[in-house]
Amino acid sequence: MNLLYKVYDKCLRVLYPQTCYFCGKICRTPICKDCLKKVTYIKEPRCKKCGKPVRYAEQEYCQDCKKRETAFEQGKSIWLHKGPVTWSIYQFKYHNRRIFGEFYAKELWRLYGKNLKNWNIDVIVPVPLHWKRKRVRGYNQAEIIAHHLGRLSGIPVNAKAVQRVRYTRPQKELNDKERKKNLKEAFQITKHWKKVPHVLIVDDIYTTGNTIDAAARVLRQNGAEKIWFLTISIGQGF
Image (cartoon, rainbow, N blue to C red):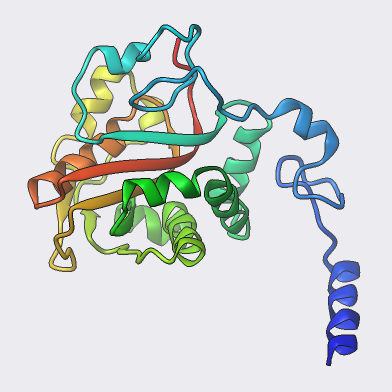
């Protein structure tokens, strides 16, 4: 049986060779040597609230978090949102590369598994898509990441706890003021929500944080006591 599995695995690798998740080139590792030099893993110093990289160790918060109160406690991300990370996420979201979600989840668990244990997370909630957008795309990318992360961590996933009730414009097309207005009353709790104290929100990208904050506020209003988030990429904090 062991020999048969090895032969089967070898055949799969010939038919479907490993490719880099950031450029698509065939390689033996998830990230090729060229892309590994380009991707920026988020390290200290970073904002104590959202986790964006900041310029100085003495700087506690990024420019966005200095200006506002958020419904979430803290968040962390894997990479800075720039090439080739942007290419990878674009393929994941719009070119049906759902397999990327497993790789992202493994990186989240590798980097932040200890955080999840320290935060004592009760449930993982992915940021929902409006049903119209999900019907066109065929899937919710945040939900894919959440389910893989749930399997790795053993934490239950509730993908139906929150629904997006307003068909909003893409946040990337708007300025900060428009983004906040765009998300006003965009989310709603559902009958599938079971009140628990500690929640992890999962999404693909964190820019100003308005989307995650809007989802977090709905959860807080319905019994969640503390909320954290994890995303794949994040913008610069200065």
